[in-house]
Amino acid sequence: MIVTVASNKGGVGKTTTAIHIAAYLQQSAPTLLVDNDPNRSSTGWSLRSENGLPFRVVDVNQSLKVGRDFEHVVFDTKARPDKEELKTLAEGCDLMVIPTTPDAMSIEALMSTVDLLRGIGGAKFKILITIIPPYPERDGDDARLMLEGSGYPLFASSIREAKVFKTAALRGQVVNQIKGPRAALCWEDYVKVGEELIR
Amino acid sequence: MIVTVASNKGGVGKTTTAIHIAAYLQQSAPTLLVDNDPNRSSTGWSLRSENGLPFRVVDVNQSLKVGRDFEHVVFDTKARPDKEELKTLAEGCDLMVIPTTPDAMSIEALMSTVDLLRGIGGAKFKILITIIPPYPERDGDDARLMLEGSGYPLFASSIREAKVFKTAALRGQVVNQIKGPRAALCWEDYVKVGEELIR
Image 1 (spheres, rainbow over the protein chains, first blue to last red):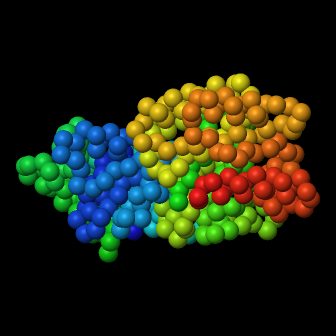
Image 2: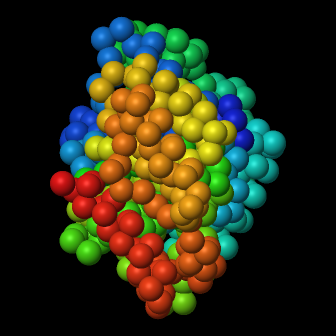
Image 3: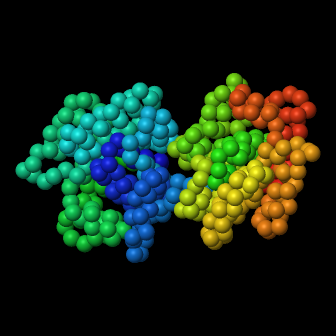
């Protein structure tokens, strides 16, 4: 399947999500992460890796040459695509994953993306709430209630806020390559997202 | 095969070359033109077509989804790629076609592209002289002599200057869809280029 990760705002875990979804999909079949973000954050992540990521990362310019050999493709995109770009992105994938943090600014940016997508016939997308602060803060639950109320397609699972994601980015790793109970919980978050994806 | 058309300068016939190489390749096998120029000139060309171009044109964002169904891919790129982009473009194709007009400014821009490509191990490229003014002007011959002297890989055939290419762009056509002896000569130019490509 082709999964595209897109967002209308930076800092919502777009690349972290692309990396970890690719790591999950790779466990079942060869997976390619295609980097089409001009910041080349996914490429940078893979270049910082000492022993390599468990899946292959290529630039979008290389994707047609190697893409045929992979069962799954995860497409990392530039932040803030315009309407025309969103249209071609949506048409080019099986599912668009749109990460958002639970704060008002991020959800507002999300709404404008979703409005654009609804204007495009047949765009399949699903919202993923990311970087949720721990209890007793209620941000995650509040955002979920609000988004559920709006009727938008939403992943049942979410991604917690955790420093280990930053450690993973810094080391060029996936959180399941990092030891400790916190990293295990973070990986479990993305496993649940992955299970929803291929269900 | 994957053919990438790239140039370090606008107005050298990059999109015209991509369109006509795609039209040539389509005669032997299903061919996809992937538009990765932010100007979306190839897409615009296809949208102006009344009865459609003889091959399919898609945005780069859609290319992985549909790319598997095509034998040949022509990749239209943005003008003035930087060194990193040139590297990924070269690695992502079987041959990079670099159009240049025979004037000094265009050849100078070409040289800087070629210098970058030579710094990249294993980049396969071939220069195509385009928009050559008719005899008695000697611009085409002069450019060819100079480029041959430099030892750079060069198409033996070139593309003449002709208003019919502009007509084709305006109507969203390939020159072989336009009647008249001039259009036939222009198509013949690209047929020769195509023959060199698949040889």
